[in-house]
Image (cartoon, rainbow over all chains, first blue to last red; front, side, top):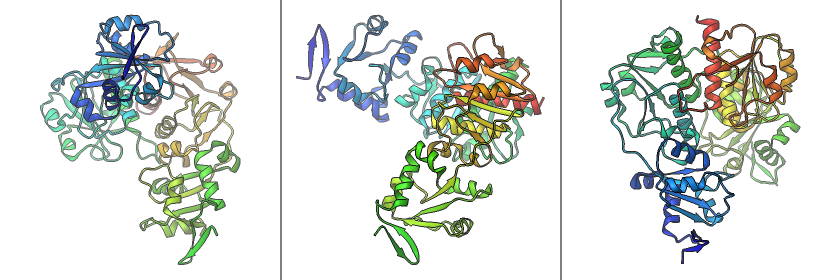
Length: 266
Length: 266
């Protein structure tokens, strides 16, 4: 027996329960998330952001140890009653949080949109660190980016770590994964910009207004040669002597906010 | 016997070796680093930055598995020959890197300077994440900050994680720890700025030039009330609807680079 009914609730107690096994896989495996088209939202904050944005989770998973959360009944209703309870020990095997909030949601990963041809796009080329990818997505949304493109070498946008660092940005900012950046940037109608130390103009002396695609590379490797060759705008972020580079999250923030300043505050 | 001499080298093979035990403590314990006044530099890049900046490590610790590093002889000379070799298995207990470069250095943590009263200072109030503290220090150095102040609640500036994220910035930018921010900011002769949602002016409509102290709080808690009360400049970073906040590293980069732009490029 893998589930018991306690006070009318389905409670999962066994590691052999198929849902428990699926949740473990969704938490840990990019391949499994892609195959199922599902991701896990870990914690009250992400679930709140999801539902506030009008998304409907597929299912709620609630720890038996959860203290009452005021919104729980409302969220269960939003999921058409699809909620299961789980023994605390099992719940802790799924969550990555040190202090779990006691609730998870399963959501469908949206179908991939086509890359935009105009507006403001941010392309990340091989940015592997999940915390960086998530916080860069937040910065992008705050600075008015319309769409984020991730190359194949980037962290999985729907992994628990990226979702956590994104703090809900996934529900408002479209993110496209495994994008062929060369193809997408070739068709883009506006300026394509990279940060560079060669043949570059200072950030503050460059016109960043209008349709704009900003490409950021990994800290170690920069952008790939094929992508670099497509750039019509080459920017240098000024740095005082003795510093070689900025963290990719900091560099992205400086570039995107300078664009916002030029577009809206100058 | 805790060390053997092989080809004239001292090689540590035992976990009971006092130096090995000290290195483990220095890697893992803030208290031990403070007591000994020593920190560990993990990897070729940090050691190179340290020596290039004119610092002299107290000791080099080399893994027996190290492939030849071109600079090794020069570095050993810089340390007046104070190098020890260590069995690979022991070395791996000290390093935090997944792919260790095979060399560590022990350096003396510089004596604390007094907080500056002018110039450009960055104060972090309760920023706990070591990766954030290290990459913020890099951003600060790149943007022309003269001194970084960390409150007691911040991550240890000399921990391996902060050093790694700092990528050598520790050797050029003075960082003061356990700073009484209220005392330091009260005496500061220039503008004291915080980011705020209350009674604030937009970043791009605020004069940030001249002597300037920027205070950044933790993402969860913001700056403490006593520090907030000292702020003469209250800034809001513009954000598109739907985004609540930026990662503290991104927010710091946007503010410090806007100051640099105003000071040097407008």
